[in-house]
Length: 566
Image 1: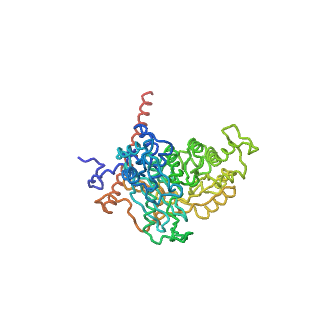
Image 2: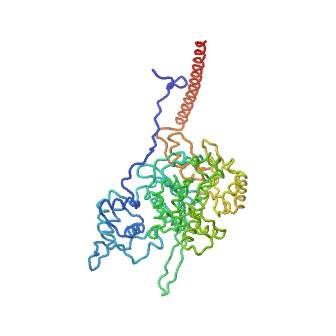
Image 3: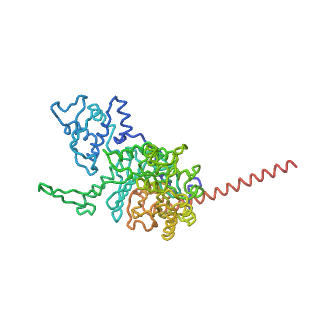
């Protein structure tokens, strides 16, 4: 006997193979990333290994200069070839070992962390712990699953496979004289924004601070390899310098393949992974590691007000970007479900307080320098135009606004957004939406409308610009590759949040990023889709029939009861 739903068109349906299940959780990390400073300190403490101030920083400095070599090789070098042996055999009074700073020249080094003539004092107990527990830690625990560069060579999208099988994405964007990397902070996202591909995945876990930093390591290696593969790379400028003593000419290369900007605008809500994002930011601006300027690091959020205030308290120097996407509360709740219960005015106030945090701190340190008095109510103070202009030059507080065809992109919405930001000297970035096959048929407004929108917002005193589209031919929006993989497994829809290009215009040459199931040709796939559609049709018909039957039963019961009462 075969049930009715196993038949289709008078013939028996073939058994369909269940799609591969997507993991909705993260496995414990083993080995752990050595770049996770908090986890390493915790393990050192539990094993009775103590470090003096600055010793762990120097260890990370040498690891950075080595180009993040495999940990066992790096530790072996520190214990052997890298040891400077003096009259005392290289041993110090406290039992530490002097390690020379002559580590391999890496393309990831910077002008501050590569100073010569300095040696690191690393305790023998620390090096012994790393040598004995080498299998518990790894320099880089993730790997590049695939990467693809746009046709004009400005954008590279990287699918990073974590050690537990999850995939996150990073995007390298090459500008004139600098490289920006967009990193992910979570696997998936819990915010569920209707226009964001990552939001359709749901949340599956946080990235550790080490895994966040590993995205920069992998990105730097891709940049270095692409640089070496091109002999006449236009990004390399060689400057010949004549020595004063008439010695040989030396060449100084301006390495434009170094990452100079980091934006947390990839997969996930960074402030929902606050501790790890904060640790990663501190490593990025550390003078002995990535040595990025504070203004070169930007954390983006959809609007976690409590964590925005925490970031202002803990790290006010970095930039903060608010993904607003609507000019008022009602419109925002329609496209950003997590906005419910969070007034839009409170977000703007928190963003403004972050921009003015350094100025407020300076005022508190030197209150005689101003005639105005700081309010006792949460330290709020009104700043004049000159003070706001000076603060905006040192650090930017930005608003990200996706341009969607509809109410949020009208002239009235532009005036509302302008009034919302009026007098605050905020930066407003308008992001053209890329139309794709999503459940909600969203589209990007015309270029003329976006220019008019920009002009109106700018008239209220904010700096407003339309973001440049990069990597549209490789689906350069964060999260799109991962969702496309799940789409093949679950027949889901995907979308993208970058650039006014139709899906049929993207990638004229088909590129297979993730292979389909083996043993299935196109005709079999079409037949399987047709069978599923027919089955869904019968299921819908059965549901309607069941509802009608239930209604008839309820009506009949009511009539019967009324008849008995009579």
